[in-house]
Image (cartoon, rainbow over all chains, first blue to last red; front, side):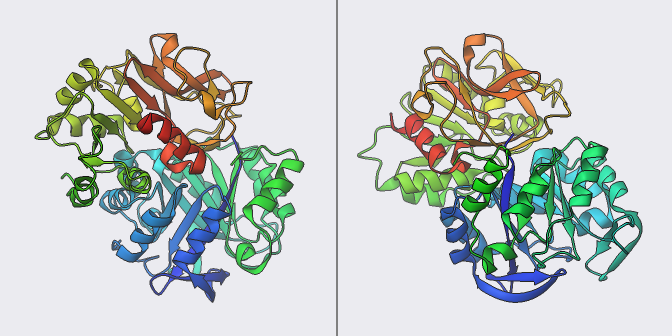
Length: 257
Length: 229
């Protein structure tokens, strides 16, 4: 299996693309059409659109302009996150042209909502995005509820992962809130921990990727199948191709475009 | 409910006269229809949504995309009275193409949905991808395919002399096809337990486990082989 480089596109205010720091929108960096063209032409492996306008809400509204652009510009896999809490939302999203959906609020409020979605569109098309924080570097990572801007009481990350898998998630995205937008490196300690825990489904890592070395450090871990990143593609000269070349030199099996 | 076919109808009408082959797409209630639609639009190929009331000519090509579960897909085909239409088309020699779940439904059954009857135009069944510490399931992401050495060479130009594909293709699935006839497996991907089906074919029916419509230029080149030759 080839490891994946996945640019994330944070949408705010319709089709404006932002980058974030610690899960707060920080700076607008372009428009969706331009970003889609850019990432597709740079041969990224997959795209993730996170619709901040709907994140945390309980209502997925089919954003027509967004969908029109996706259909027009994208011939690679593309996933969607933002406001999906039930199978109707998920089916609507898949019908609209997305390949996968990610759930966060829906999962945090009711783990069974993932099972319900999975039974309709298949577990391979359902991911769960888990934002987390640590009190300090040695403490257990805890789920961070972005709606409350607070640690979700009593839910540690590893229990949440296990619960997501048991609920039918086909992929897990672990998002380090403190590293988000920092470019200071991914949570390699967590990547190593994940290898030991040996979860059966693909795990993606997000938050902090700022150099090609950060990608190779994470992707060299067996369980980590992909790295999701946004800021590096907006604020540096790195592209999926340059990062892929570096990872290949490091002995990691990457996609042949 | 079947999605309205206004896009397809618009695309189709101006090209029907010059194109004797019509592509009929099964529009499942949850599927990757728009990804395929993009390919047909870019290549200016005539296409329509397959409906039970459609006139279906032997020269038409039926395409079954699909995302979701085997049960959901087959229940849709039966409830829309499309299963018999598709089987009859295949038996008459009409071309039938399945992608992902659409490919799995070409077979007789699937462990994903016990007791649910598949189309059975290719003998065999689907089984869960074996769990292995070296291979995450679902199988999500890019992988190379290895072309089997048989007479079905639609994939041959996409491969090196070693039989491995020059480019990778995008997979997203938890079940894999096990055709009864070994020759029906025209391409495979590597799994620690052995080679698993990446593409299957039988006479005029062909199925891809991966998503050529989501595999960039290599995927489009493969679709060109399927729909333009």
